[in-house]
Every structure is written in C-alpha cells, then in structure tokens.
Length: 350
Image (cartoon, rainbow, N blue to C red; front, side):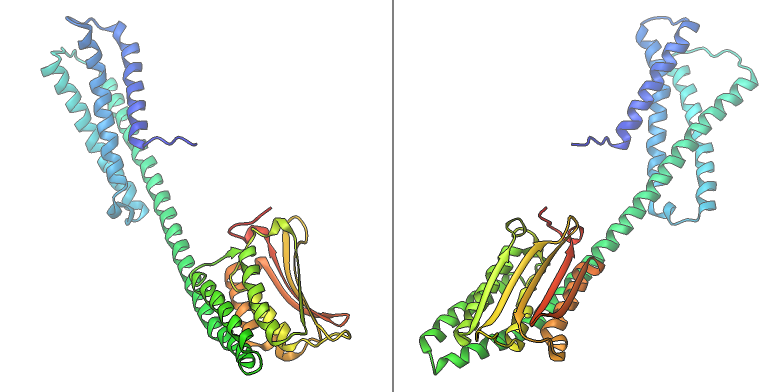
C-alpha cells in the first residue's frame, strides 16, 4: 500500500528540519542566557512562522478565484503576496525576539539585511509556485475525471436505451414461438412460458449492466434455445466453450440476436437438422472470439435485421475499435463472429 502524506505534514517536516539546521549552524555563534530552551525557541519560532506562511500560501494558490486568473495575473499576485509576507514574517520574527525572548539585536550590515529579505522572499515565491502548479494539476485531473464520468454516464444511457429497444423485439419473437405451441402442445407451451419468465427475469436484472460473465450469457442462451426447440424440433444446438473464458465478461444479450437470426434464416442440413453451434475460444494472447455457426446461406435480411443492428450499436458503444463483428458464409454454414481485445474488457479472464 502506497503511503501518501498530506502536504501540510510535508511542510511541517521541512520547516522542522530547517529550524534544526539553523539551530546547529547559529548556536555556536551566540551566547544565550538562561535555559537552553530559549536557544531552541529562538530558532524554531522562525521555522514556525515559515510553516504558517507556507500554509497561507497554499490556501491562496488553491483558491478557485486565483486559478481562474490568467498566468500574468497569477505571477503578479504571487510576487505581491510573497513580498508582503516577507516583511510580515521578518517583523514578527524580530518582535518575538525583542519582547518575548529578550534578544538584543546588534547593528547589521545593509547587505546582510537585503540578503536575508531576498532569501525569505525566494522561499515564499518557491512555495507559491509549487502550490500553484499542484493546484492547476489537481484541477486538470478533476476536469478529466468529470469528463470521464460524464462520458461513462452517456455510454451507459445509450446502452440502456439500446437494451430497452432490444427487449420488446426479443419478447415479441419469443412469444411468437410460444404461441405456436398453445394449440399443438399445450403442456410444452406452459413449460415454455416458465422458461420465458426466466429470460425476462434475466433481462430485467441486466438492464443496467454494461457487462455480464459469459457463463450467465450462455445460461440465458440455453434457456432461449430450449424454448425454440419446442417449436422447432429439428433445431440441434451445441456449445464448445473454453473453460477459462466462462468468467470473461461481455455485453448482455449479445448471443440472443445471433441465435435468433440463425434460427430465423438458417436452413436444415442434408440430415434434416438445423445445426447451430456456439463457440468461444482464445484467438491469441490479445483477442478472444464468440461465434454462432449455423447451417444455411447468408442473405441480405440477416445483415439488416433489427436485432443485428442493435447488437452492432451496443458493441460499438461498449468496445469501440477494440472489437470486430463479421458474418460470412463458409462451406454451407453461416459464421457470425465477434472478436474482442482483452484490454477492452472490464473483467478479462486471462
């Protein structure tokens, strides 16, 4: 765990060290009457005033009104404040020495006084400059964080809108499948309604979720396929999922439009069954893919369907350029493949 100290604690340590250094350098040069405590206080009063001045400069530099000024105005203000605080600092140091510590001041050369004032002035300008840079950096980071949060909120709102758009379409198609069973197989229709309730429950729970584990997506897909199998007995689904990918996250209801289009537009193979396979595998160290393969031919309606348009929009919103979605016909089968880069996932499983 990384330890971070508050800036005021850092200033306290720095000025405590300065006070000790001044005491070590100057003590042998002067004679003190009374307790050695007087000698210590005589040097640490200067350090205490320096700490208070640093706190005040930090407060000034971080004020929103100061950050809203132009660079020239900030520089001129800093010089003015540093000059005023230099005089105040030295005056308080002298008054404490004369009236509290009973220190006797000898006549000092003008060069020494000017050098001392310049030394104090440079310290304050340095503190003000450092705090101003830190304040501007903090403001920039806060602005970037606010922008990121706003963008995430916009993305989430767009995804929720797309998911809500998909749900009526999905519900209509599923109800159509169940309606065909009511007259011919009422018991199966009843079982399908129970399974539909599971799908609706999953749909509601994932309404405000950007990603879900692949295992949850597969569980929903299997329930959906069971409903469709009651209506289309020739449907023959299979799953080939690499075990380590089950905890990899993906946008919710990604499989459902692919399965729906495969069932709606697929054609039975020579054996009379509509083969449908769901595949998830690692392509390489940076990408993994989720595919739905079915027997049949690729036609224009499959590319322009509502479900696929919605899926393309959700994938683009969630993963941007870090994904690829394609549909192609190979050797009598239609392959719909989504390829995603691991770094684009909120919860990659590698």
